[in-house]
Image (cartoon, rainbow, N blue to C red; front, side, top):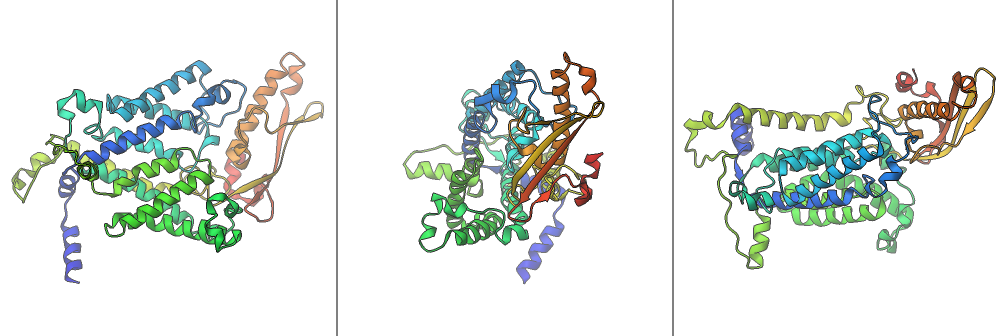
Length: 465
């Protein structure tokens, strides 16, 4: 009890300057350098896969294709410009991996990444925002102080200490990734086993089917074990005594996800960043195990060096306004990571008919939908004619029909394309037309509900208008 009281008193008496000093304490750069290299490599792999670099002509080459930008004012660039944007991302990801011109490389990758992400919501996944945020966090770090070309060419960056906050903010980001995913699974649809069905028949669960049925695998392993692992794994990996076992379970979890779902590099990025929860010196210990000697990291002006209480009188000299600002921005970022997934009262309408900020709420795996029917009907109000449009026309995927705001965007895109098609054939008769979209979707295994019933959800009235 006395220890807890002393700890609480110490926390209460801690000042902001003390926090700044702690966040700028020198730490070993080796782990951060290895993680930077792996992240850059995985982003190179992500470009042709989830970002669509391998089929860029299909995704962005047809000017008639409908896209769904987050902000309607955003215009899809011409195909040659999109190729240039992807080239910038490739150069940036290569620079991040090699640690060459590191600050510039993070900008070359990060800015186009966010731009392409915002250009089309229909390609968003739970983790899409994560890669962009990690790039932003790395851009302000000293991740090029180890295992980098910058360190090879510049002595001031070669094997130098990095501030403690470089590790803290990345560790916090991935801790919240697991924890928020667990909190979002505390939903009756997930806990009752409705969200993910028939996964128990997958070959990856063959060992479990030796003593469980497929339905039991779905309920116990996929839903309940997934919920408990996401909710607690971050804590287990923070504790040194439980870390080895936790990392084994976490590794198995991500490897299984990589086989079960088409989620690109996300499982591998999580695997590559798991060492964030280990001691920062693990690469040196690994090299030492193989009898490879390494030099101790050198001092750098980026850190604050205060040992055994000496130099406390110079504390004000070390705690500059720039460092205070950096820590303030980091604390703001930490607060946003907690707030945004529960900010639906601000972002009403930008979701898939459930509460939560779409693309940033980790709800996408909790609720699943099966499209039963999509009917797109265009009525000429002047002559009373009507005709039907293939819902797959001018679209790359069918996610648009599950989101009210995307339905509106699709209707506008459809109108534009039809006007162009009829411009040489009595175009005036088609200007006064109305588009009707009838959608029937089954959410989880429950009774189908008509998605165009505006009375069902008052949240969508704003989008309807």
